[in-house]
Length: 213
Image 1 (cartoon, rainbow, N blue to C red):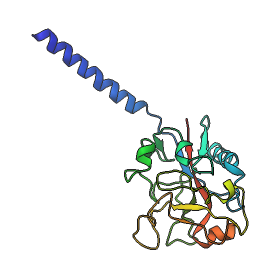
Image 2: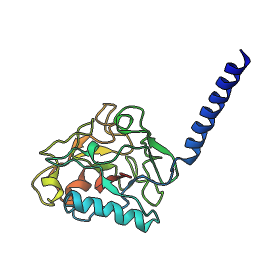
Image 3: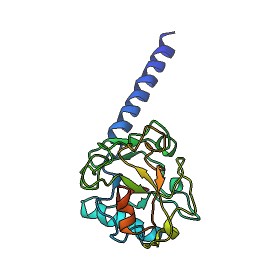
Image 4: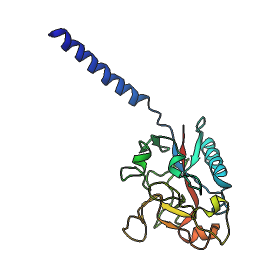
């Protein structure tokens, strides 16, 4: 009887050691951030390709290389949730944002004003700060799927026409509604897609970036 028990004990210890090793080896370098600056042209980001390139440029300038970056943006043909890889994702301080796509789009995600940091590890102004910059471009519903007519022409418009759905990185709005607290689907821009229109509701043309791998 002792041999089977011993074998089982050894197997248990080995499994625990493997689990601990995996946890220790998990890459906690930055794989999520809020852009510290936008394009400067409102919601005209040069399309998804331009937005992805902006994410990459900011990450590399911050010293994070060797990763493929995608903007958390939906378009008329793509869903933001399908663009960002599988997770897990960590901010610039190594704090976990979410384990996977499902947890990112649930109440279990770790996105707050204190954790939704820029690529430089800095907090972004939210409601109550001057200026307020909490509106994040997403073009998405709460589940990360597209709102085709709220992507500012697939992120190519910067005038008085069009609209963009935005979320609040600080999870704070005018009331306690779910929309006001949503990180990715709070309200649409008002007055178009220009930089001025985005600033008018508490934005600055910023958006989320995720490392796909």
